[in-house]
Length: 313
Image (cartoon, rainbow, N blue to C red; front, side, top):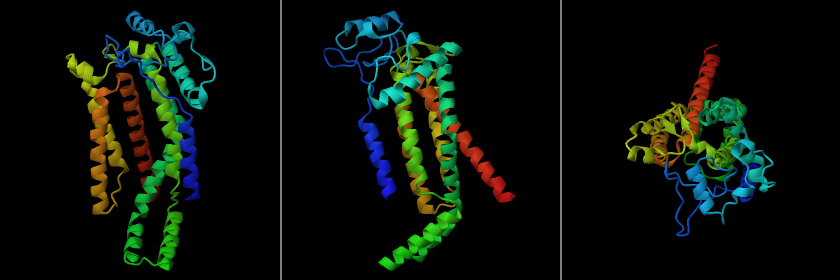
């Protein structure tokens, strides 16, 4: 419990020192929009936009955005703008620099998002694989955990609770389950996730590009569909399906019927939430989300196969 408290405190400390994406607003306190993509523009951009129309919008808000002191995105470095706090300096700027330079190398910011997403997921793979293995181990231990719950179902005295706790720890040890592993992974992954999204949002040239000749990276599916470009809905469908399948892989066949109902309800709520959110996110973010989901599915299938081979050997 003390370890969990320390982790929570560290996360609170991290987020208390973070920056965030600030949206550019006009004199009427309404969000300034890109006239082509209808994308809400960001105030604290890291480099200058190259699109003339977008550049003119920022010039109209020179009191909020100092374009003269911003480099072009091709000249951006991790030291640009000096120290801006732990969040921007350690997380956001290095990720922005990585995406920009990958984009320059492969001549496509869409592919730069894909490559950088895969690189980050590969770096995190030892942690995410361990979490996936923990999930598999919990599924294997579930029958014994269910028996333990039945054994102490109506026993609430302190002695029984202590005995139950000891027996549970023995089951955890038998199946190599570490209850804190999920917290530790979240502590590592969640800040990177939000830093990556912020890095994309603060690089204006990303949203000026078209991916695969079809998808404008700054346009959201909702705006595109309203303009008659229904093929943008493919991202909504893919994210909904990959989210569903990812949850399905994580659910345990050894769960009780009540647990399965709860899991199904939670999965349906998450799919609905993801689907609604996908309507309003930019295509650039949707590309990241899609690749990340596909990586998670491939990873979980790999872990399941390795566990199955161990059980059959």
